[in-house]
Image (cartoon, rainbow, N blue to C red; front, side):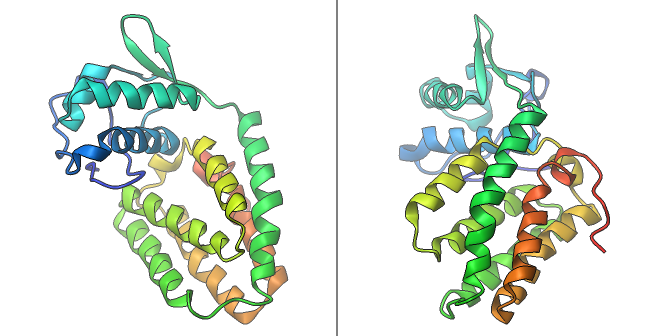
Length: 243
């Protein structure tokens, strides 16, 4: 069973009222309580572990995280402003849905922005960050093999953020990070211990191979397919054989 851990964007197993008997590990840093709760609940929603329509309460979340109600309430208000939840009078918050059209628009934007930026890195892929990116890519593969979804998501987010940062465009990194935060991967929790999750993980190492080889067209094709998983595997839908 997935366990919540201190750190950004690590999802939780479930937050239904029926499961409130299972305690979460205590949060370590009091100063980051609100952001920790917000990141964790957001990651659970993004991954589909908290599905659309799920109702959660502030007292229930406070019990889960072993914190007071104040940081939880603040976190949920922030998630409401981001469109992840909506208030339900006298009950708590309900997880909102993202339509297929919403996902298609997010994927289209990410492909328009990310693909050419990463492709261009193949023309001059800097040497210093390669070892660090390799380590992150291996971490993604390891997490996929172990079925550790929290570790997979955290490593995946760091890998793509650090790769895009090589462009030197901080606004682009911020924009793509925001697009990723709006994306829902409703089928991702069902991919634990599947070949699809392992294949998606291996694509990170393959991408680095292509970048180091300077193969821009192959980088472009792989990035386009990789982001497209949002509408395929990560939404619980089949994809054509890549050949």
